[in-house]
Length: 481
Image 1 (cartoon, helix red, strand yellow):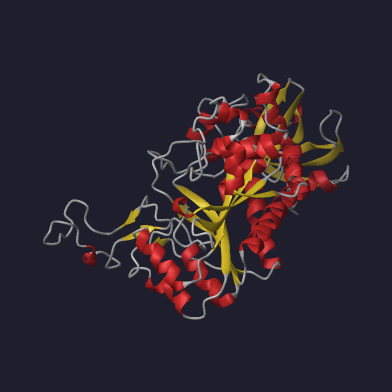
Image 2 (image 1 turned 90 degrees about the vertical axis):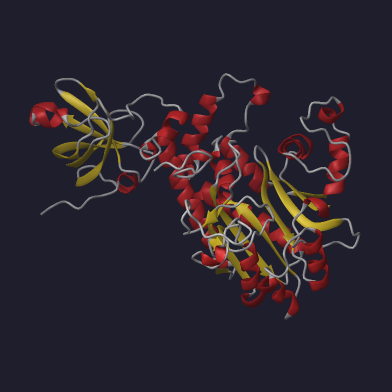
């Protein structure tokens, strides 16, 4: 009878010496001599490799030649206590089948250190490295934690459209969706493209946010969240920007700005605790990797150790302060007075940059920070206007090493204030009539926020580039695989 396959993770957790098993996986390394070979096998279920001990005289020479780095093999054998350090058990091979060869002359991931840049060019294979298998196991765990958190709280998961006729952020940097012939599009009399002839009968784009549609759901179901891809046609080739990324956007009826902050802090801590409880082996591996990488740096330039950093967020209450208080702190700070900031803070109304956000978190408070009450002129049209006439009930959550990780607000529920603001910001009211209906019929206090999933992944994994926490990054001039 054929032995049923066991995953390496399960084998290492519960294996008893003496039992026979079947394992399948990909060869990471093979070493040894004419008498004995040691094959490190990995099947993706864990960062740990399983050592397969091969008694060379018992196997066909041609078969052993095919067992090279990257090859897929199936091994039947007996679990034995390990003689070496690093693992408690290994497997003495009785039978080996090569399922798929990997020509060592051509297979690009040979057992040596590869740069992350090189691995980005091989993004279709990089999952097979320790670093990326760890990152993407954690990504799965974090996505699962998102759903678990909101489900436990009684929120409803809502799928908002990817193709939209509105620009939620007023950013204007959107990807157009069209079936018109690019060489010969139908034209209006004034020479502009006639989108009435297009598939949807009007100009449409890929969405930058599910928030506006999410609000419609919240104003009927109470509490909803979206979790899906969003798109920004922003020509930014930085370590923090992607053209396609995933957003988590809860919207809650009857929540004010304080409720919103409370929920966001609880949510972030839940995800971090989930990672610490369920991904420790992968986190330890990534932490060691980061420490190796930073060996040459001065102590003050090194990041906080990864697991310590996660616990630091978990164990501290987030500091809450107003934008106005933050501006005073920044204006009087040493880096501002000594002109060390790239963007100097001269007065109220400045849009805070990443360097300012990180100063507040890492130097001033040494805790995550929630900033509220931003000037209305630097925020979106839908945010609740405060009584001072100058600020809105917006909130940004700032994390060490990242800067802004969450952005949200109480939403403006007053129809008149909202329409006036839309006029001031040139947001076309007639196109947004459906959105304004939530203010016409049964309007109520409500709030919500957005968390960029990849930014959260950067924080949890300690990776330095956002391209390394999404399987297939979409960036300017790059849509490979």
